[in-house]
Length: 70
Image 1: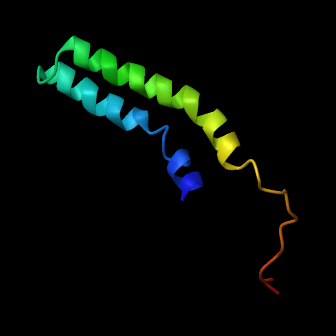
Image 2: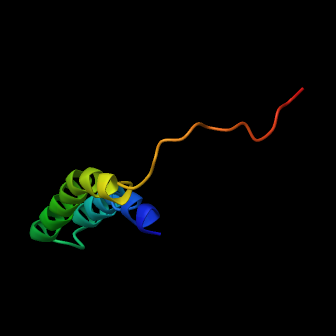
């Protein structure tokens, strides 16, 4: 659950698109848009170290072939 949750953190591009549309329509103001952009950048920068932490106890394994197509 932790790994999936941390992997979903950097999803700010969707928020930025919605915020840009809201800004052009006049629904939100520039300070609100600035916060959305900041959060998108912050979550993008924070997620790689968090993913490394989430996978700290995983041992690299050999991929096993589950089935073959003959």
